[in-house]
Image 1 (cartoon, rainbow, N blue to C red):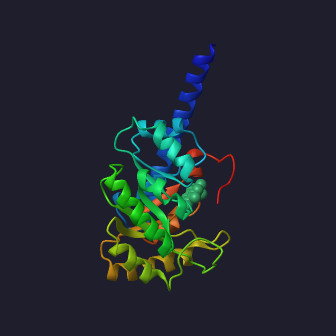
Image 2: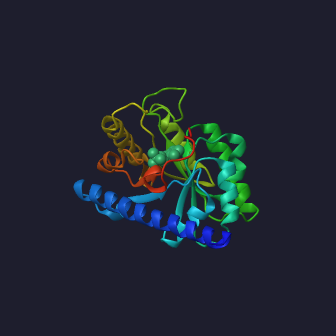
Image 3: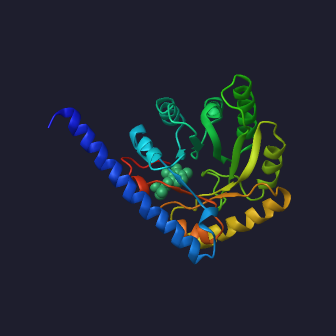
Amino acid sequence: MTAESGTAAAESTRAAELSSALTGLLTRIETACRAAGRDPDEVQLLPVTKFFPAADIEALYRLGRREFGESREQEAAAKVAALGHLSSVRWHMIGRLQRNKAKAVARWAHAVHSVDTERLAAALDSAAGAAREDGHRTAPLEVLLQVSLDGDPTRSGVSPDDLPRLADQVAAAEHLRLAGLMAIPPLAADPEPEFARLAALHTRLRADHPDATELSAGMSGDLEVAIRHGSTCVRVGTALMGERPITSG
Ligand SMILES: *Cc1c(COP(=O)(O)O)cnc(C)c1O
């Protein structure tokens, strides 16, 4: 076998692997929706492609996926640049974000799921404004507020007490659109009561902001529980892509 045909064979093996994992995952989501009495169309699958190469994203694109989640700005920006030939792709920033990366993220992200402070929201608003001015984007940046479910200040997420004020700020920002909420249950916690609390916070948020309909909740291990509690977007890495080479924060 030549080196080139070896590479092609490896690529088609990987594409087949992703195809079969995707089919299994979509069935799993559909089953969870039926069990919860929900329409599967209400729940979006967001493949989380961090640590995996652009070639994997291209394979998923050929399988019909158009939205991808990344958690590190530099890694994401490199993939966005490498995949510029793919049309209609929407990139989601789902990881912890430093304010000094706001400018870069506003150029490529359709949505940011991890906004948890007023300072970050303000930085993203001006960055999205600049990106619109210089032609890098047209639409406002979709913003999901990441909520801290356990109130641990060392972890990401706005506390439930501070959530209403942050929501009002984002809703009033010229270049942001308040899309909804996101949360990650604490590692060792039973996700059931965590997602129940999140759902209650979401209901309360929508009383003030009826268009903030998105609830980004559920990952490989707990997506069924999240769907039962109203998730509209499950962010799935491992169950689709396989084990990551290193774990990320
Ligand atoms: C990595 C990551 C995921 C995906 O986690 P899996 O357990 O691999 O499905 C979801 N959300 C965020 C914010 C992540 O960083």
